[in-house]
Amino acid sequence: MSKKTIMLCCAAGMSTSLLVNKMKKSAETLKVDVDIFATAVSGFDQELASRQVDCVMLGPQVSYMADDFKAKLSERNIPLVVISMQDYGLMNGERVLKQALDLLN
View (tube, rainbow, N blue to C red):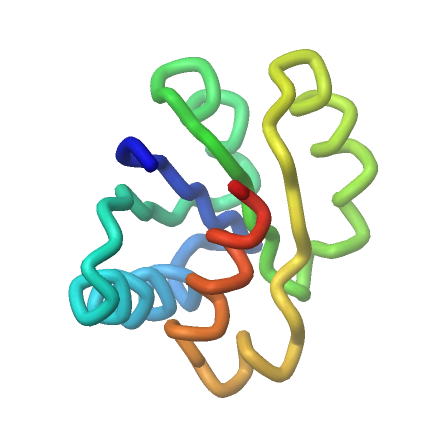
């Protein structure tokens, strides 16, 4: 698999940034070549326009926005998933990374 880009999106982008760091450590351990970044929902459109994004993961606190985001992503065939509340709350980077990789395969 070629290098993939995973965008995490939450209300302000701050808590998701912590999760991104844990996901990056898991990616190193698993020897997976991915680019992972976080953004606030307010920066979603700009990030989508300026970067190649292969999948989007929403924080559970913004899960109510999933349908709006899916509509925007469907034109570009970019899959979206809401991160499980448990994995998000525990900041389980390995499980969230595996969820993203499953989405990409």
